[in-house]
Image 1 (tube, rainbow, N blue to C red):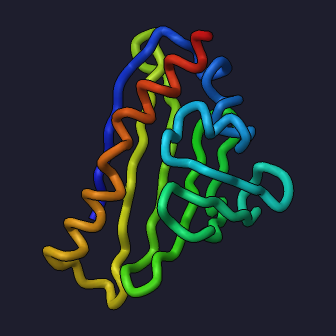
Image 2 (image 1 turned 90 degrees about the vertical axis):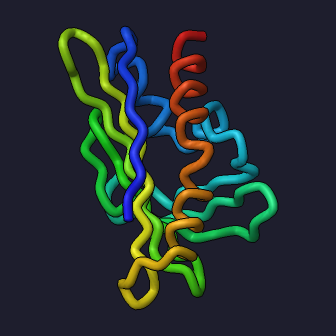
Length: 139
């Protein structure tokens, strides 16, 4: 099950990418992020830990990084499943398209109303994060 939010901006991909590639800049656009660490370069396969408001520290892995364009990180939520957070930049009609997606692959691989509600809850602040990303890149 996957939820996505996208919008375009006049900011370039080059202006936005540093807010992805430097995890310490994630605080600018992730309002519920309390702490984050990355155990190496911002590259496919690198692991780290993040703490979200009200949650214990959670390991994550950068499962795909396309320099300057996109990255996807994955976290496993016990008894719920694997959560993939995709962040994409693309050129569209002289503007930059920003797309943030949340995909939940539930334990057992079967979507249920409970997993749908869990995914929707995880996704709920994604539109705000895109607006915050744009605002931060303008400052």
